[in-house]
Image (cartoon, rainbow over all chains, first blue to last red; front, side, top):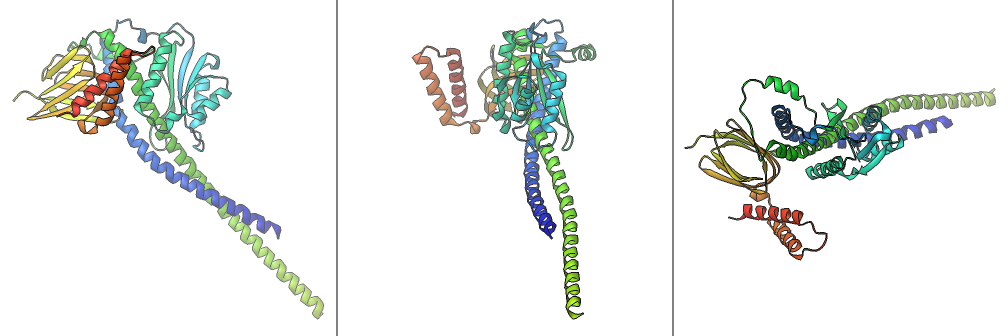
Length: 287
Length: 133
C-alpha cells in the first residue's frame, strides 16, 4: 500500500524535527541558567541606583532640571530589545505588538536591539533610527553606555522629547512580561517618597552641587536600566525558547505516536489483504 | 582602632566589595577625599583615581574609573561603573593605551578630541598606578 510508505516518511521527518527541537531546548536551558545568573547579578546595582536617584529627586523636589521635564519635540524614541533569532514562541511578537499599540508609529524613532523587533516594527511603519542588533548576542555595560550617550545627545538637541525602553521582564522561567518604561524625563514616584521621608532626615551634601550630580547620575541611571533590560531580555528569550521547544518536542512525540499507530494499522491491513488474496488464489486453482 | 563603617562597592556586573572599613580614600570630581566613619551624608561624582580601602590592619587597592559615591550614616556605597582590582588589570594594555593617548595629545592633529585623549591617558595612568608596587 502506498500510504504505508507515506506514513513512514512523515514519521521519520517528524522524528528528525523532534531531535532538533530537543537539542534546541537543551541549549536554551543551559543558556538560560547562565543569563539568569547574569541578570540577577545586575539587580543590586540597579536597585541601589534607583534608590539613590529617587532620594535625590525627593529631597530636591523643586529642582528644575532638563532631565526631569519632557523636551518640546513631539517625537519619541524607543529602545526595543528583542532577539536576533526566532523559534522563541511569542517572545518577539509580544514586544512588537506592545510597542505598536502603545506608541504612534509616525512619531516614534526606534533604536532596535535585535533583528526580529527591527523587522517587525519597520513592517508596521516605524522609523528605524539605529540598529544595534549585534549587541544582544553578548551585552556588555559599555553598549548600554554608548546607546545612552547617543540618546541623550538627541534629547539635548531637541530631536526627541521622550525616551522609552521596551524589553521583556524576566519574572521567572516561564513568566516573561513585555514591559515599556519611560527613561526620560525621569519619572519616579517622588511625591510618595517625599512623604515618607518627611521625618527629620539627615541633609545630604551634594558635591559639587545637586544639579551637577544629577547631570552625571541620570546617564548612569539610564545605562544601568538599559543594561539590566538587556540581560533580562536575554534571560527571557532563552526561557521563552526553552518553553517553546519543550512544547514542540512533546507535540512531535504525540504526532509520532499517532503516526506509528496508523503505520502499524496500515501494515496489518496490507498483510491481511495479501493473505486474503493468496487464499483466494489458492482456492481458485484448487477448486 | 578607629570606628568602622560598612562599605559596599557595586559594579553593573557584581558586588565588587563588601565589608567593614575604617577609612576609604578615593578621587572625586572635586579632588581627593578620605572618608572615616560618621562622615556627613554626601553624594559625589567619581573621577578616575586609585581607591584605597583601609580595613582592620590591611590596605586594599583598586582602580576606580567612574561612578558616584553615596555616604550615609555609617554606610558608604560606591556605585562604580568601572572598577578593577590590580590583578584584573592588563598592564600591557594599559601601557599601550598610555602611549597611544600621549601620542594623540602630542601630535595634536586636527580632529583629535583632546579632552577624550586626556581622559584616556588619565585612565591608563590610574590603572598603571594601581598595579605598581
